[in-house]
Structure formats: C-alpha cells, structure tokens
Amino acid sequence: MGSIASAVTHEFPPYFRVYNDGRVERFKVPADYSPPSVDPETGVESKDVVISEETGVKVRIFLPKINCLDQTKLPLLVHYHGGAFCVGSSLDVVTTRLLNLQTSVANVVTVSVDYRLAPEHPLPIAYDDSWSALQWIATHLNGKGPELWLNEHVDFGRVFLTGDSVGANIAQHMAVRLGVTGLDGFRVRGAVMVHPYFAASEPDKMIQCLYPGSSGTDSDPRLNPKADPDLEKMGCEKVLVFVAEKDWFKPRGVEYCETLNKSEWKGTVELVENEGENHVFHVPNPACEKALLLMQKLASFVNQG
Image (cartoon, rainbow, N blue to C red; front, side, top):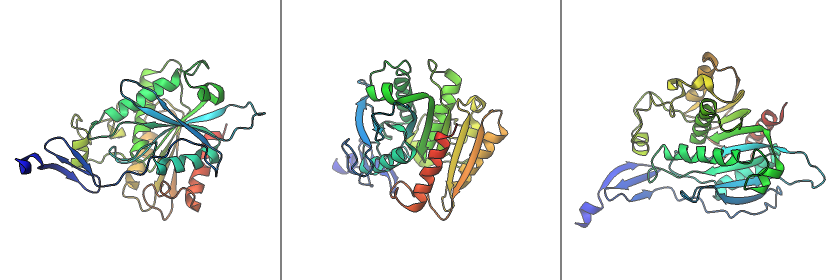
C-alpha cells in the first residue's frame, strides 16, 4: 500500500514532483523568508499587507527613504516575481534584496504581489490573485484606501507594471485585462518586461501540469500574446522589454516586441539586450554592474515625462 500511495505522477526537475496522493515535493529549497524591515543599505522600508482575507494573498510594499520636507508623490511600480509559476515569493530574501535596491534606484513605491503558486494552486489562480491586487491598489485612487503609504506617497498618474520571467507574463496579461475591462478609473502608464516568459508553439508538459484548464500553449492568450485577440486594447502607452543575450527565452522576448509593433496597439515598445548575460541574472545578484544598469534604465523609463 505504501508504494502505491507514494507513486510519482509528474516530475519536472529542477522544480517539483507530484505524487498520486496530491503531495507536491519541490526540488529547489525555497529562499528564506525575509521579514519586512528598514533596509540598512538603502533606507527602503517594507511592510506586508493581506489584501484578501478569503485567499490570504499578501503584497509586500517597499517605500524609498522619504525626505519629510518633500511632499512630491512618487511613481508606483507593481511587481510580479518570477519562478515558473511554481517557486519564488515576494516575501523571500532574494526578491526583497532585489526590490530594496530597485525601489531605491528608481525612487518609486513598489508593491510586489505574492500570488499563490501552482501546482497546489493551478493556473489561472496566479493571474486571478494578481488582478485582485490591482483591484485592491485601485481602492486608493481617492486617497482614502486602506493602506496609508499608498494614500500618502503614490502618484496614481504614474503607475507601471513589471515582472521577471513569468512575472513579466503576468504583467502583460494584467495590462491587457486593464485595457479590456477598465478598473474604476485606475490607469497604467507603462510596463517593464524583464526577460519575459511566453509559451512557444511546442507542447510544454510542465505548463500542462501547472495549468490543466489551458487551451494549449500556442492558443492560450495568457501564455502567448500572439494568440490574444485583445492585444490591441492593452491598457498602457509604452512598454520596455529586456532580453538577455544568452537566455533560452530571448527569441520569445524579441518576438513579443515584433508582435506588439505589428498589432493595432497604439503604444510604443523599446527592446534592450543585456549582453553576455543569462535569464534573470539580476535577481540573485542585483548589485552587479549590469544589474544596476538594468535598474537605471528602468528608472529612466518610469521617471521620464
């Protein structure tokens, strides 16, 4: 009986295996939880907020060091972490270190969404959680939302979406959904896609496991922007896309830019290549020279008129 109960039904190294009793075993050891604090190097302060009592989904908010005499409100960066939809967290050491530095360099308020992970919470749950976070952020438009930092410090005329890898995929889908449905006057000016993951035409067995309800990697608009009939309605005016020279996913990022340019979307898209680097190189090493250059480019994109 023990051997039957522990039979493996799916295995996808280096990420996870699934047993026939529903148990999930992850091969990658999750990065340590990092409690919210004031970062001694950048002065960035962070806090965690539960945005849904029903699901328990949280966001981590990062506030740059504020001059109490300066009442200027700051751009808002809404961030979605990477991790193949099945690993990673906005609350771990790796993401917190990255966003402390990025928040400081760009001088923005950052809200990072800790969406639930597949396969325990199969897609499209990550997308649904991410949309719930935007709905929660939108409640602050009148300056009377539940979170004081957003009410006091955010310029809601300068909101940007960003993500790394699958986080960029989520940011893309959020931008389109905003354009299609609207959100009580909430607007996004731009999006920054860092080494985006978009599905290719060939079958992806891991995605099929993570997203059993998908119509297929080539035809699902969440996974493949080329298949999205609403792409032209994307609710932002400009997009910045980073690709890495040695990244397996580089062609998909380049194709995404070409797809946007050929569509009826009225915005502008800019492509930047991180030469000599691999996929999301900046996440584990955010203080390296090329990671800082990436952040400075993001800062310029967000802060320009």
